[in-house]
Length: 205
Image (cartoon, rainbow, N blue to C red; front, side):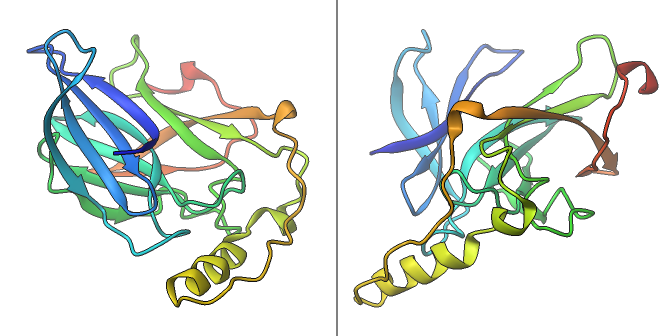
């Protein structure tokens, strides 16, 4: 099957590998990797099915905390940002329970104008997880960042068997893309990402 954005995971105990990716415009897949981590075994599970973009989830960013398995995903709007979604499971293969948008304080609904690509635990801090996000269009004003409705209209027309109107989207120059690094706060098992103009690792336990 075709694969979009992906994340690779190796279990820290048994060394088994897993491959999370978007099956294009439909759902997320978790596939078992071979023992040498260079191929898939053929066993896989399906998760978070959605009818069409922009609701389909892509760009899975996996992390593990307190024995639970988390995925933060993006909607499908090309290089334009959209609301993230976080889901949690007790095993690599789920089932995953959707917890909602980890950016609840962002009124723009664009994940602070970025797309999370990786989450990792700081090696010297007991419970500091950091989200790394791509900001594909740093010069795009906030008023033009959310293009979800345009994608929704386009793919709704395709789904209905109609000829969609052409996209009239702002230009995006990804050669100047940059990054957003933000700490993750936890309320129980719920991860939350808040905006910080600047922050220090030393401020976290």
